[in-house]
Image 1 (spheres, rainbow, N blue to C red):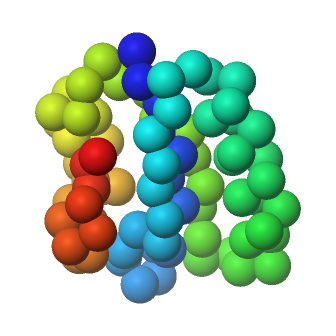
Image 2 (cartoon, one colour; image 1 turned 180 degrees about the vertical axis):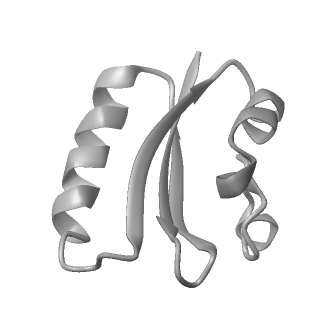
Length: 77
């Protein structure tokens, strides 16, 4: 399973940043770091999503994957 850190701005409807991880531990550590970074921004959501493939991720988490800028920044990886 692959793990994807996604930082999503709900108000603007786009992905701020994303990164793929092969193990859950580093993904969660990156999530906690991003949560500290964006703690003053209430419109920003920081999540780690798990999926077997990027295609599967697009089906199960379309809100994050179909954001207005998602494809322009190479999402999903």
